[in-house]
Image (cartoon, rainbow, N blue to C red):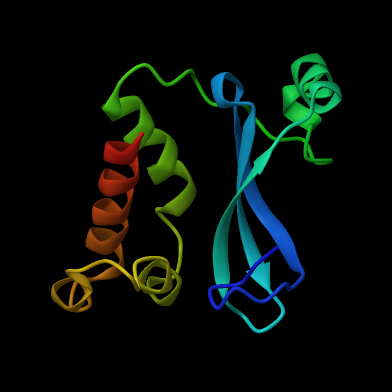
Length: 124
């Protein structure tokens, strides 16, 4: 996958979710150099069949499936479940290109996670 500089690199999939209506898996990857990146992967017809047969084990681990996302609050809850315990440095890395990053840097980890999850949910 491409890193933030556009170079092809390998990474470890740390977490992912499939949006069936988009036929896309959205993953968070940890790269060898310690960077974290988000990457969207289109799914083939056969991958969609496999996902629908067993969404809990699609990523080769048992992963509890969240409730369906019907509202921005559902999306926020989904993201917060994942990022509430993320390290502050990781969240800041994810937000590095945000225009207001400097005003977010002083926030503590909990507030930063809330801001991150709210914006991710708004993007849904």
